Image (cartoon, rainbow, N blue to C red):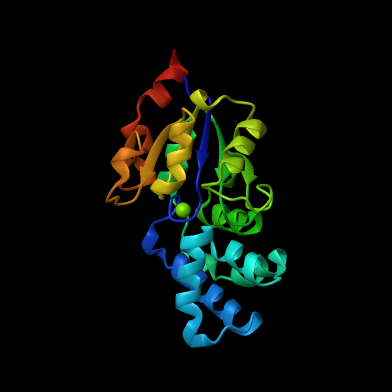
Length: 216
Ligand SMILES: [Mg+2]
């Protein structure tokens, strides 16, 4: 029986083509050039290297440059969220059907998550935002992040469902015994996810047992 659901935020609760990711990527590139001083022409290559080696740009920057993580998060998440994300009544209705305790489980910062949830009109559904700072910057797919999630929610892996747009972030959850749902149009998601669906709004349709359990 699933008691707790961990939802990723970015590209999971809103679609990939919303423009948020592009805007964020632009701010990260700007930070790397303007604040860290990496030549503009080298930024794409350096960033790619950081992502491949460390999982996130932030971790790469922390490793190679003595950057202030808090300042980085503030700078890069200066985004026009309200113009990119509209209220989503279908998502709100789907979340209302789910009796489980819901968490946001994101490699992003809580202030960004709060802003996105407000723009979507779904903030009331979530018990807590587990963000990159609570993860002590050991973000998904680092096992530390998942252990933290089980600890904060007081649930065992077998009582949980993880919802994410990235197969790499679902793999550790699956390995630990959690259920997994992959959001978006996956190429190789089937190996790690119990279900995969185009949009998060379809979660209760794809996993009807989540709702049925609540009624008996
Ligand atoms: Mg995501």
